[in-house]
Image (cartoon, helix red, strand yellow):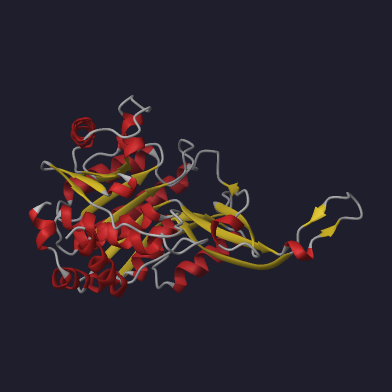
Length: 351
């Protein structure tokens, strides 16, 4: 095992997490509302008009999703301040999302309101009589599929230019795949590249559903299947380390920054310089991988901003994800205290 990993102990973890409350982080990207609608099938009725089943909603709950899920994890880990850059619609979902984010203590000054945009929403029907993933039903998504108006692009650029020099880390969550329809438009990509070059002491980190190759000077996170899709070999299922490292090196050279490649149960491969696999925490029992990548990002970014090496940051990201995947039927979070127990489990597994 890598020497840094062998030396990493609870004292080092505690020293790093103790710095989290001093860190200032900006989150830029697509803020979604995760809205859960809980139904009870024992109360189902039949519509007199249509003869179809009328499912009875007995509870609703909601939480920030996509860039909001990253934000939620950063807050749970104790980030000192969180400034959000993006937009919501002027609708009920936007009101709920903004209230949830404000309750986390976030600065939503730069989370703009757009009357001509919908608040992106993942509507998740849930059978409350079946706990965990078994109770989840087909999801209903609300997204914007038309280009962001120029005035909103200008507002986002102005916010980014103001906020980035004032923070220790900028996390970009590019969730909307439709070109130009989310917060991360071509002008925003160009501004990020310029700011990352201008602010070398600031951690810039990006996760993107479809545009990761268009980032420059920004540390990027991909999973192994996205990586091989980018390299034109999408059929790779379990690439060996040589193949993996060639693909990672090519992407790192292309974006001009380090690459963190998640490998599922195997852990994370970290690049630049060289390449190291940081093993994951083995988790027994049922797991819910929803949001695992977001929780990994949150832990890794805070660790980097706190002074961790890339290998240490990947391990802390793994620890966070190992806690959140145990939380079924929701996008989970982890606290610094929970990471200590996760590290003990990890060390026992790889002793």
